[in-house]
Length: 279
Image (cartoon, rainbow, N blue to C red; front, side):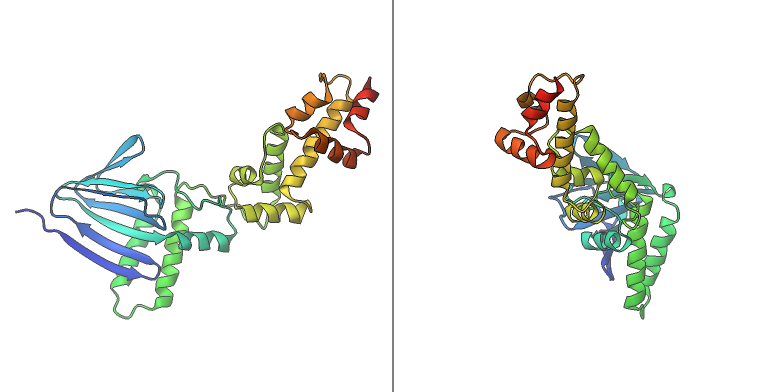
């Protein structure tokens, strides 16, 4: 006898719980899910996941996590049965905001998508409790909401993601990392977007960090440090530079008239005057 196709679904606060079997070998493809993370636990049979330039075979006791921007391409065996947990992006975002964890503007992304359940300490038991609570006839929305928050928090702490879990309430280390990156890359085009990506935080958080600790914008700080580096080199006879223009272009100052003006505002003289004086 062939296995029967079946689907059980429960709405559980912000989560969706599904148990599904197709009753035959089937390939399921769809574009990216956009606002939902799909967590799939294989209960029976086997499954093939196809991603960008790689494939993953799943067997019972393994878990697959699909990011919202990942297309779906899954092939299930005839006897395949799985449990699916759907988690909306807004739930993970709200956990990050509440904990003041830093995430890129593109949102939370799981960097590894395949796990054995035993790697995730206590997660199976948590899912079992959630499934049990979903079947309780008089389950309180408040209780379901708490469980949803716990599940989302455990996903973010047990799995590899692109967020930084150090709190913004102790931001000094994060700021020092950004400033160190700036110092090491002053000749590059260091936009606020680039810095936010490096720091794994939103643009808004980056601006808040600079405003709170330095009193200026990231763009202003980068320009100031570039000018200080140029000034130090123009003042130093051992710094091998042939002309002001060459040095200015090296540090990304493409409009030389504007460069001379901001340099004069910061150091009280034109760059050419600093350069002449060193010789």
